[in-house]
Image (tube, rainbow, N blue to C red; front, top):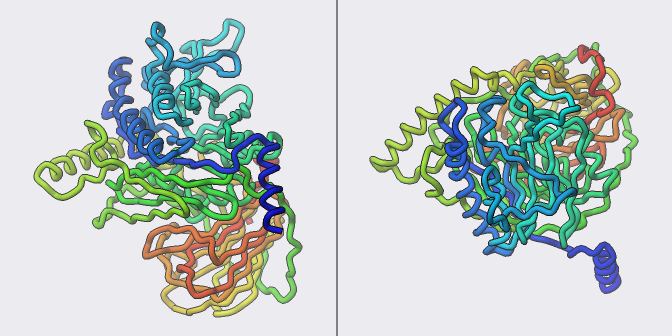
Length: 568
């Protein structure tokens, strides 16, 4: 029987023409942020970007020395954050469409002006024999017969892929912009894939992952099983921390997700991973203000479990609770606000890897000011550096707040919460079309903590952006007051003997999320949890960490443009 299984798998691999596995790397980048907030010369922009590209080159060399096949760098990692349409211009390059021309910048000996970043990335890939995925800015002069911005060009948030020979093999323009005034939205959604000897890959960027096109289309229509995901993701507890939602995407769609995030804890940018359907191969979560970036490496199967979803018919007998008019608490804010306070202990550190390798970011990577840098032992020089960095961070913080970054996390969704006051119970809570059911037994009871079952069915809206969600969540409240339920917290001590959470969703796209607490550090949990499409189950085996939240996060893509009220 074992020989038959091995033979079958080998035949499938040969038929598809791909190697059965590959070694992947993602780099969470503690970027060098330009200190000027004005339009600079191209030469100054190149000097700024070189500091980050030098770090990329060193991490690529490390990855190549460990036989990595593909490395992914984060969104905005080359030039940094907080640009407007004019100040981003000197950092942009004209990136050709690889489906129309063959382009190997590293082979260019004459035409080098204006494509320096592409040459650097191309040569980096060729010199190390590795696929490189990076994010940069593309510019396109408008056609005479097209509608055009006033400055005469379109500007795109762009992912580029170079193969081990230095050829540009993919270019993707981000579709769903998240408060990025410096860039334009493509007129048509791009569904970009590229082939490698170890599988076909699709590309999405950051906010794209929350919408159907192109993220879901790549999986359902084009059969992609490996998704590249450069991101600059701001953690939003309790439902949308980076490691929480990105790992759930891999579970729901049965794909490998290679997620590379920026490392900028001042504004909650952190959390990277290599996620597979059944487990997280490697991840990194460190919210320390001056904590380092990290290179994650793991071996990944090229073709994970076949993508398939099915509904589970819930057993609702014996459950008690309320609907949208019942006795429960309606909350108006469930996501984190930007935290600009540093922690005395340097923040929380968390890294994990399964059959993978983890390499620390080199301490002395480039000259200049790094927004997040491990300054090492306290010497007179390091103290001066730390003071200088603090002053620079406050300047960056003030400028970003002035430009609206501190308000984009605001959330006025009317979540409804039912407190779990008994050690064992079957409870439910409903809102609009969604009923959430929870069968649980606590392992320990304490008056110092409050857990609650929450529900939301409506249009989530932030400053003109919106997407329709249906959510069932069991979470630990920040305090023992039910009014604190839904507020961000990383501290928990509660354990459960068992729990079963499910809901009556009217969408088939339900993301299963579980977060646990390890002395105030966010951790993912897989060993003791069972996931079905619209159901999460847990049975205590004596090794679980305290639960922060178990969530079924449903997305109703076809209602994103609706005007349905989210009031109860």
